[in-house]
Length: 413
Image (tube, rainbow, N blue to C red):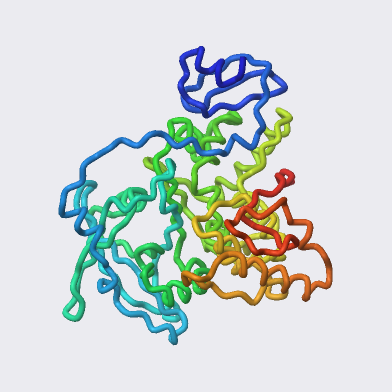
């Protein structure tokens, strides 16, 4: 009988389970059901998301109309010729259920503006990225106010970060960049490294947490008298969507400091990086093969290289290898999202282009051609993993399709 059949026979309706081959034990992450089995489950399923059915809910007509209404005219203008010019979001105070309100302002990074940059995922941990809510952007004498459509996870993040009695200045990509203005989007993505490096702090929103994640954070933040957590305690945290998003590599690597925020708790990023070594110790002791999420592997590398994590740069092809299994909605972001991490000598001369006719194929091809001509080596061929998955691909067979998952990387030492 299969592992899944075993779980169903034992009245567990989840499919989110994992086998420890040495012990012959099968465990469900969702309900904790554990039983012996002779089956084997590859470790790569550990981090696979298991979307659950969404609860249907009715929205009021005012919210629906606001979501359908274009919101471009609510954005104060940006001058692309002024280097360092961005928008910030002044999130107005309020209680948990109060309407979200903000004031969008144009500022320049050169003038030492104080703000926090938010690292999060547009979709929630179930994969829902529907525009189902709004934030009201206050108007001025020259510009009317109005609603900007946001996702459920973005709404939850803003409610979690909002202060009850004072304004909080944030940078949130989906609100501070006019997503319908392709020229502006291209320009602001090029400035992403500077935006996260210039932030006073990067706030990482991980979303709603399972009880086991709360226990792990409690262990990390409080003295437990030398007691170690179980290996299973780490995995629900590492499986959250944020840890496998490609953009977070850059957002964390250049940050002065970072704070992880969950539904009820918060955790300093460096504390998690230190405890990632505990995770690796448990993995090795139990003879498992469970790689760290790439962003944590980067974190371990930066701490081993000293305190100057914000200046960490590495070879671009090595970054592409590490980030290969990371996810992104636009395949072009597999390259755009990590350009700021590469050292100058290995950084390809590519600029973000989100125009509708810019497919990932020419982006991947230009990078491959540039790498071969610059290095005079066939190293790029090491990253070709089967046929391209891109629809109607006209890409040469020697050009890696970075949307194809690569072989699992060894555990960081």
